[in-house]
Length: 137
Image: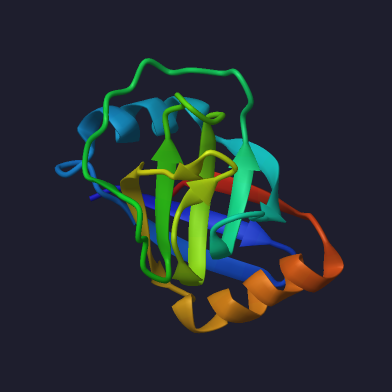
């Protein structure tokens, strides 16, 4: 079972890749690592953080997809009616865009640090984009 470390300032989270449930998405994500970017607060989805990728497409099908990620679940939306993105739910979330409800591939779940995730989400909401690093450990 592969573990991903997500770090932003004082916050650190450990997450489990869901390789059996979303194998193609996990392989594509692993190729993106180490990932350095910023989480910004979602516009349409509620309590979530996202990394937009615009017109980038990885050729992924839907697998293990959902519109209702639970707290600590990360989705990769492969693109289509909206831009490709990664979204992390820190609370109540309904994955959507200006075009309406979306469904993304649930490929990662936070297993350590979940108790700090809401505080991190509120920091992004009230203080703006936060730099993050993700790496395989």
